[in-house]
Amino acid sequence: ETLYQLIDHLEANQTLSTSEFVRLLSAFKDKDLQNYLFEKSRSVRHRYYGNDVYIRGLIEFTNYCKNDCYYCGIRKSNPNISRYRLSKEEILSCCASGYELGFRTFVLQGGEDGYYTDGRMVDIVSSIKSQYPDCAITLSIGEREKESYQRFFDAGAERYLLRHETYNREHYRFLHPQQLSARHRQQCLFDLKNIGYQVGTGFMVGSPGQTFEYLAEDLQFLKELNPQMVGIGPFIPHHDTQFRDEPAGSLELTLFLLGIIRLMLPKVLLPATTALGTISPLGRERGIQAGANVVMPNLSPVGVRKDYSLYDNKICTGDEAAECRMCMQRRMESIGYQVKVSRGDSLNLEQTN
Ligand code: SAM
Ligand code: FES
Image (cartoon, rainbow, N blue to C red; front, side, top):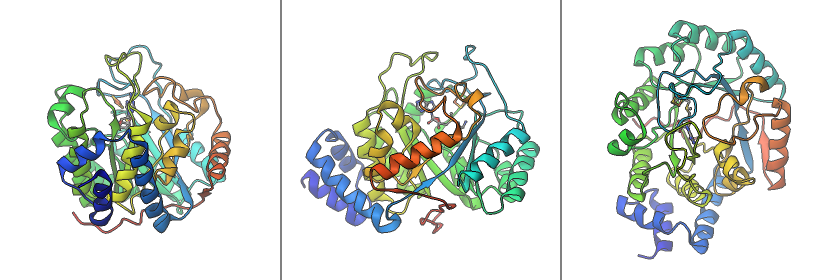
């Protein structure tokens, strides 16, 4: 089979074998092949989502973290950042300005911060839900007990983002300290799904030690989990981590993977991430053109944005929420897409697990 036939095959069957994925990924630099893939992934995207781009208001509410992921700038053992936590009132005020700007999904993301006990999270989630009943709340606060996930769900959180980071156990261990395991993280994802969350997972592209084989396993895992959302973005080094001298992940490979994922999971919600916009000025636009259909502008208070420094040179850290929102609108319109004011639920809602 030629590589073009592999793409046809992927489109027809929504999957490939692991070795076929490896073959395809190995050819990601081939421009003609990229164009062939993107034409297909764009047309599948248009079939289900037209020219709409969904927006999510990202609220980075704490940069305290008990974990020590080797790639991450806000890891526990980085002494060189100033730590912050937003109060419930501050979070609600982010939601208020977000609502005015047309956001109908709020994503609460943070490090794994013990200050936000189950009780405090339930209070925050239910307060947002009662003030903005027409909005969806997405949590992204890492690994917790299934009982905790259930309590957040009962309080009104309907979606959860937890990237699996890498499926391969050895690679996972290479990127994380001993106490963290690929298996436990994957278990959390199945727990979340069983509770009834719309689940998002994903991984960094070009993380240190990553191979095409590992990426192929990541793709197989996506197929198995069948999530409603998939967040992928390039790894970008942070100067205070042990991976400071590692190269960033590539734009081309990230776009290629977005195209593949769109063909694998036609209805999935697929963000063009901030990291993609950080490695290339038009990265997010190109992500949309490769099959992505979500953007997540920042709603965090400007005063804390630079402290949520997962990686170096993160964009949008100096802009007001309104500026980011308008900037995003202009960017999407410049490529013929429109930002949609709605909750933007996934069409991929059949629960298969
Ligand atoms: N603590 C929660 C968790 O672990 O899921 C949410 C916050 S965590 C900082 C969000 C995501 O940031 C991670 O899933 C990881 O993929 C990404 N990330 C961390 N460091 C990064 C880096 N150096 N480059 C690109 N992405 C990074
Ligand atoms: Fe905790 Fe990254 S080490 S969010």
